[in-house]
Length: 390
Image 1 (cartoon, one colour):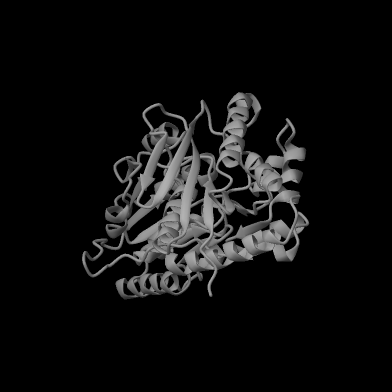
Image 2 (cartoon, helix red, strand yellow; image 1 turned 45 degrees about the vertical axis):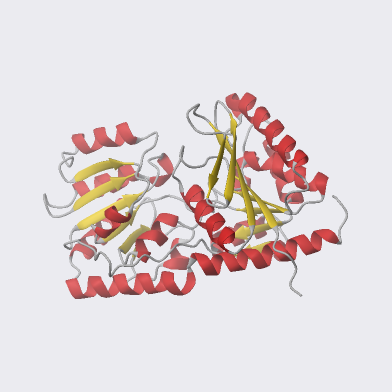
């Protein structure tokens, strides 16, 4: 007889509608897919705006938000908010300890500490989905470099988390370098829903590019704009979909380089389908990633990716076959790939888009990803039943 489905609590440092980042989108997709299978899911997140509801339901998924002044993964001068977060998370997990079996934490940054501590105290397994890989952006390394208790917090997370999800080879290697045993590292990719392209075919004309993401330093959107400024006028157009702290600076850069007419800022969109249907190429100049949800979503729409060779990208894109890759931070290499994309014959471009979509269909469907998570949840909760509290 099959054991009952585990009940899951997901913990995030930001969530919709206050942020539309990759972790938030992946959490919503995964929680929805899990709920369809009968898995009980609750989401715990901060609430930085008074207008954002403290309690909410998304289908069968419940969302509980705690009022804070700043995001709980920052630390430093935001330590007061962080301490409030710790009290809220520890208190909620203690009071509701009979209502869940496992704690699934998105990203191993500062916000993960109280959830990991609660799991250790209560004998509940904790699973951390690492957000970014690489020497500068790997989650535990970022925590370790925090001035106040950073080393202690990083070691606490590394020691007491029951298991980790690595969605790229680079992240798995980073975990090994931190001394995480192989049996605690689980390779599960991000997942997306496959859209129906027959219902509304794409409308790109061969020179339309789109970027989806948060406008911050890590995405290096300034390099993207500089690259487009190198192209002959009216040869290509770029739609930048997203918002963030660098938006005004980037708009000023577009004006300065005289590309504002062909580089447009659409702001944050809750539904990016229309932007993807109008594009021929998805472009990303990120300096670091985990596994880009925007990249997967674009490929699911048969949009050809032109992306930097960062964590996750080489797991998804085969250069010259399902997309185009270039080294991160290399403006000359980026411009060369832009020119190569524009030189693609229409038939070749459509063929690359089909390969990109088929890659997503075969390896990154959200239903398959959800099934793999359920299997991992079961294994971790079963192991926790025979182990004492740590």
